[in-house]
Amino acid sequence: MAPDTSKRWMQTHRPIFGELPISELCMPGSHDAGTYRRGYHTIFGTESNVITQTRSIFDQLELGVRYFDIRPCLTSPKPNAEPGNWACGHFTGEASDKIGWQGANCMEIREVIDEVNRFTQDNAELVIVEISHIYRVFIDNPKSSTARDPNDDEWNSLLNLLSEFRNLFTVDRAGGAKDRLMRDYTLNQFIGDGKAAVIVLVDGYPSNRDNLYNRGLWPMKLEDDQHRLSLRVEYLTRTATPTEAVLSTLDIFQLFGPDHNYNSVLSLAKRTQEREFPWLLQRFAGEGYPSVIWMDRIQNADPLTFCIATSYQHFNRSRKLNNMVVVYGGFLVTSSNAHDTIRNAIDSNKSLRVTNDTLGCDPWPGMTKSCAVFYERDGLVKARFARENYSLHFEQDVLSIEYGNRQIHDQNVYLRLLRAIASRTRFTVDNNNLGGDPQPGVVKKCVVRFRDMNDDKIREEKADEGKTIDFETWIEKLGNSLSNSHMYH
Image (tube, rainbow, N blue to C red; front, side, top):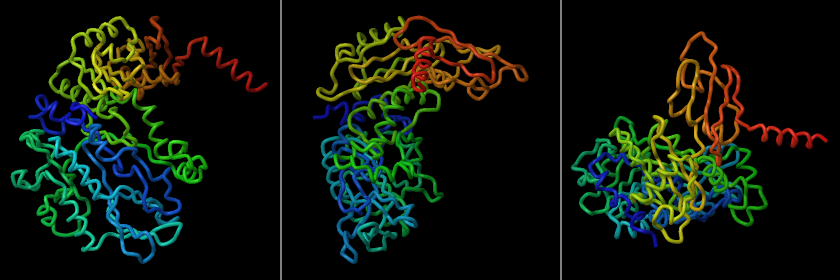
């Protein structure tokens, strides 16, 4: 069973965020949320290229997801047959002129509604459901399908269905305001009365907008075509290339499930997460803090961990506070002992293993958790992330960046160099990579002082403008040289 810190996280943190606009909160978002199982499908609509999630809507809600991307299709499973029920569809669409519409129906919209209603019955949370990519789909032959926009009767059947969400945040609950940006509403305006709020945003409805308002629904866009919520979003998703899509469809290993197919949507998402998770929060420190993180393959509390950490760090920065933020398994760690342990590791330039003992709690027994830490040092916001039983590497760090006659304290430059050091990628010394030109017309030198993972020694590497810095040690260079030598003999 999910803990309250996950399934009721908005209520848990409402004392801090309740009077703030929801744009200052960060929410986990589920991309193609209802495609965790496959129903009616074309012959090339395989599990590998259709399924983007592995958990039901209810499970995702308990994991902390609060924003859902739902794409309804009304599909006839055979030519000229009566349609089935509205369901979450995942079809190629844009490739219809070449190979026909490929894809499948997944979870029924009725089930989406029932699971959201089941959740909000006991949890007074804000849930946002975005309805888009709405089509009437015909599977014309075994290889492909065709689609068109819904007619009036089909639209009405969908809207009547969507109006069965309970706890709808209606125009009346919004005080009658139809054209106000919802990003400006506070969390308390949605759920401060102890009652859940479900916002249903509908895209592309061609008729009178009052038909939506009267059912408790909202047009996704305002009259001026601006998105009603207009939130800053981060897409942590990975669209398959045409080659990957073909390979995914033909891979024999998909007989064992999409997780065994190297090019499946789930496999692409897994590799993206493995590559980006360690750097995600550090990137936010330079690029800005999003209000929604969209993800495929939501399996545990990792998205909630990122979002809680991001929300509190955004709060700190907007108020010029330098409080350390520690989140473990979606739980905000406030224990002074845990903070002292982490601060000691930071100050002594040591790694710290993520365990229940280290962090003084087990917020979700039986769940594999992760830990996210924001802290400030050397005039920069720094962030570290690690899964349970792995280490937060505070020792691996960039200590100083000198370019020409200037010391660089730029968040984005710091991240570029930290990633280059960790991945042993050559770093090109130029004005673009180093955030500007401190001495126009002068050939400058870049000097980087840093520490490596699991090493307490300070290293220094340098190169002139236009050259590259190689962060490999001489031992690594020797090993690579020997390895390359063996390849050619």
